[in-house]
Amino acid sequence: MYLGIDIGTSGVKAVLVDDDQKIVGQTTATLEVSRPKALWSEQDPEDWWHAVKDAVSGLKHFHAGSLAKVRGIGLSGQMHGATVLGRDDKPLRPAILWNDGRSEAECAELEAMVPGSRTITGNLAMPGFTAPKLLWLKKNEPDVFSAINKVLLPKDYVRLRLTGEYVSDMSDAAGTLWMDVAWRCWSDKMLNACGLGQEHMPRLVEGSEASGTLRADLLCDWGMSGEVVVAGGAGDNAAGAVGIGTVVPGRAFLSLGTSGVYFVANEKYSPNPEQAVHAFCHCLPDTWHQMSVILSAASCLSWVTGLSGAANEASLLAEVEGDGLEKDCPVFLPYLSGERTPHNNPRALGVFFGMTHETDRAAMGRAVLEGVAYAFADGQDALLAAGANIDSVSVIGGGARSRLWGQILASVLGRPLVYHSDGEVGPAFGAARLARLAVTGEAPETVCTAPAIESAVEPVTALTDIYSERRDRFRRLYSALEQEFSVRAA
Image (cartoon, rainbow, N blue to C red; front, side, top):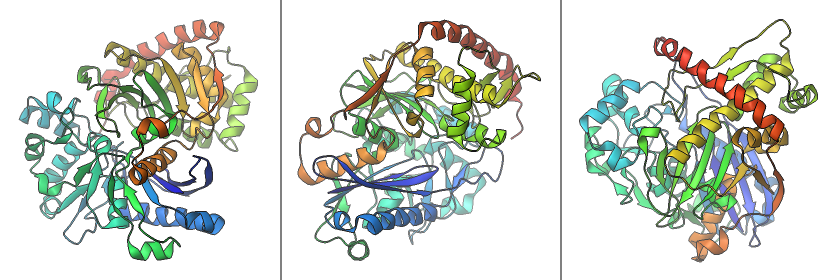
């Protein structure tokens, strides 16, 4: 039995997976995001730990016998979050999250200090990454910065609480902008530019390697026994890839979570930072991947559901479906938290354009679904321009539950989309697979296979033509408003 734990932005998910790779049980504990100022996005690291304990307690309540048989734990988590600890291992301040946009100026400063940064890291300096956040702290909270003993990513803070070890994996560490991604090691040049050294960083392991063992007190609390290995784990997207079998070059997936990710597995390191495409290590040895990232995806649907007074997301989706997809609707720019690929613009804003007295809740919901799809299409263009080879595309994440959204996405992207059983479990299932690899030493290709296909959604030709015209309007609207976004108040 293996336990996968995913530290997401909106919640912590825990899943129990047996030796036949069947999900025995799963639980979720919710999290909240704090936005104390414009562009800021933070969470208290202690909230992650409390949510992990709540999620595991839920599993113990319903599946105590299975939990007792756990041999390995895998971790996945939201990437890039700056979790700064003092010498007592306590957080010095709230963690600055992946969708925080305050460090725009520090990005330019970092690239000026290290002219070869894009060659070293394979990525543009973006406010979402960890390194510019630390430069911001150095300038704006010098007392906090001077007290830093370790900088950890969200899942690695949870690992510290589980094992007492400072460890990260290659895939998550690649998103800090402190790593030499080609050589899979920390870069002294990038660290020194931020006033840090390797002594501030965790030890690096592959995601399928052991990083430590579960503390004795937690073994007792959770009803486990023997030695329980904690695997290196992965950033949430790489873990999702392992869970869906996206470990073979050419395989791709769309993740419809809080953010949206278009992920393609590669056999070699293939950077193209100019297109705002991410090139990261995969969580398996000697593999890499490319990603395009939009900062708001399923979170846009949650937002418009609350804004419009719909009973819940399912109710709103039913209204959209009943209204028909061919009808015209406003244009929605889904930049509620700024944007990465391809714009790299933390100041971009969400926009509804073209509303009239006839615009109703269903039209607003449909606009949101389409707008997120157009943003994914921008990312697909950037990936193809970066040389990505895309054979098949699976769908994971909470948004994967909506086949209506899948129909829109397939028609906008011009590609069939594949849905797998338990696809919404995503990264937590991949983390459990990494736990198994760390315990058994099996070959990854024998474990990280694609789950059974539940269904496939094909593009609809009539919709493809309609969406092509609407996407042109979507892109023109961003270009027309880009100057307005640039004067957004800090």
